[in-house]
Image (cartoon, rainbow, N blue to C red; front, top):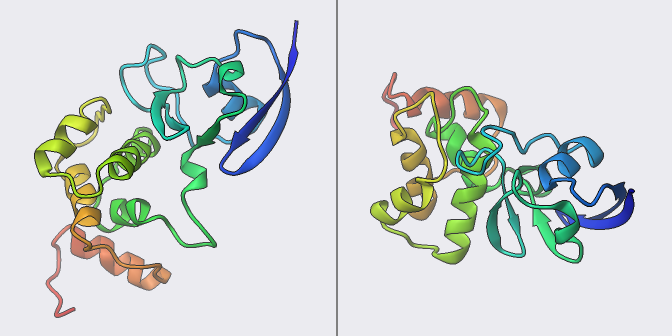
Length: 179
């Protein structure tokens, strides 16, 4: 039997009717239509479904949606503000921290949870924290480099499309520029 639930996602209230066993991942993707959070393993070990609930990193594929009523949920869609990417999103673009994109939302959300808890982590702390997020495309170096760029303040502010393209080329170290 469906029950009414109000979920606060990225600062907006969403009133939905769900079965008591509906997972947060399903509610986000299917009921609220926020599809940035991805389903990977469905058993809570890959990190693709990571979201932040009341400041805590959780696997939305293991979390009941009804248990999140009255809590603030942050998804990848909630990071950009006023058209400007969050510094972690910008860093993943500039430093090539993504490949196919399936794990990227979870990687960025996990990194945000880390930086919220520890704004100045060491590389080892980042590696340990991010170990719960799997990526089949990369060797993880570009993900680590992206997170550390935020920690070290090496990320551009909002950029135009042309600058974004140059940043991607520079992140691959294809060309050297004076800037």
